[in-house]
Length: 232
Ligand SMILES: Nc1ncnc2c1ncn2[C@@H]1O[C@H](COP(=O)(O)OP(=O)(O)OP(=O)(O)O)[C@@H](O)[C@H]1O
Ligand SMILES: [Mg+2]
Image (tube, rainbow, N blue to C red):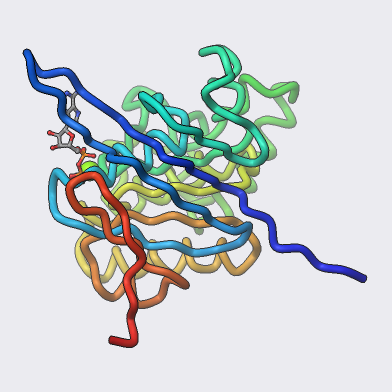
């Protein structure tokens, strides 16, 4: 039996440029990067360095100005907006720092939301969403609205929602930034476990203890990336 490690994310000379009056600002400056299937990569760097821009370009939330972004074999620049939405729904689970839950919907309804675009019927969607809530330990909070949940519980709903469509890649932009350290550790344990079960995990974080668990740490500075050597 042969075993190949495949790059699930491949960036070639990617730039993201903003025009500010007469000035051009490179939020991403000629970034090349490759992430293998099943890797756990931590992304660090100062505020404003381009971390979220990088995560957004990889996730198809934002388009690169130039260069190639290939995720799970799809060249994102060749996709229409509709195709990008489908790609995101199928391939990427995205966890926002601010949770981004629908406040007038229950936990279960929030997790069911991304499944509306799938071919599942309502009963199957509900079953799948319940399963995801169970996975994050929130079965007993399925009918609570976000305002009736703690910060850590809200983040777990957001993770369940990101997992609902069984994505290949999980991208988390400071997932523990709004949590106290105990809640943060719980969320990290959960993400780590998902990675051990095979999901490719990218976490943007300022937290050294998260970075120390990652297989690789990438630092973003002024829109450029480099892999940190942790043995130095
Ligand atoms: N729409 C925009 N127009 C112009 N500049 C922008 C725009 N969006 C982001 N930027 C700039 O791009 C740079 C990178 O932003 P980004 O959000 O990626 O930073 P970050 O590393 O995630 O920072 P933080 O740690 O504070 O979240 C910043 O300097 C920001 O000011
Ligand atoms: Mg950011």
